[in-house]
Length: 166
Image 1 (cartoon, rainbow, N blue to C red):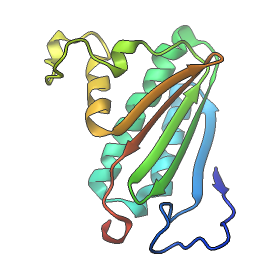
Image 2: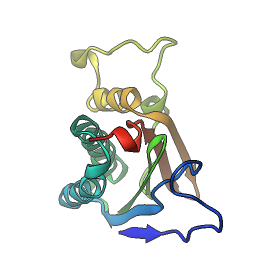
Image 3: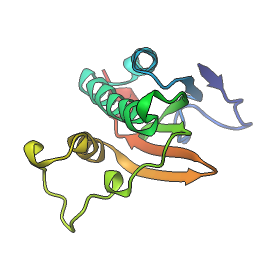
C-alpha cells in the first residue's frame, strides 16, 4: 500500500522540501461498502500520527463521503469496479486522489447551482446533496477530470504543520 519514491540527490527532508514524507499511500480495492470500510481504516492508520484527532475525523468524513458516493452512484446497481485511493502528506496538508471507471460525476456535485453557496437546508436537498456540500466545505483545491472513461477526483485536506500536529 505504500510506495517509496527514491530521494533526489540534494533533497532535504527538513527545511526546504515541500514533501517531507515521500511514502505515498496507494490502495486499490473493489467498489463495495465492506472494501470501503477496510480502505478507510488503512488510510487512517497510515496518517493518524501525522494529524490531530479532529483532522483525522475530518479525513474519515471526507473519504467516507467520496468513497461511498462512488460505490452508490458511480457503480450504481451493484456494477463491478475498482476504486484507487492515493494520498501523500506534505507541508500544505494531505493531498488525495481517488479514481474509478464508473459513470461520470455530475457537474452539480462540484459546482452547486447558484452564484452564492449558502449552507443548504438538509430537508431541501436531494439524496446525497449535503455530503457534497461537506466535501466542498472541508477540502481545498478540489478538482475533477474524466478522461478515457476514468474519473479522477483530487483534493487537499489542510492540516497543521507536521511539527505541531499532535
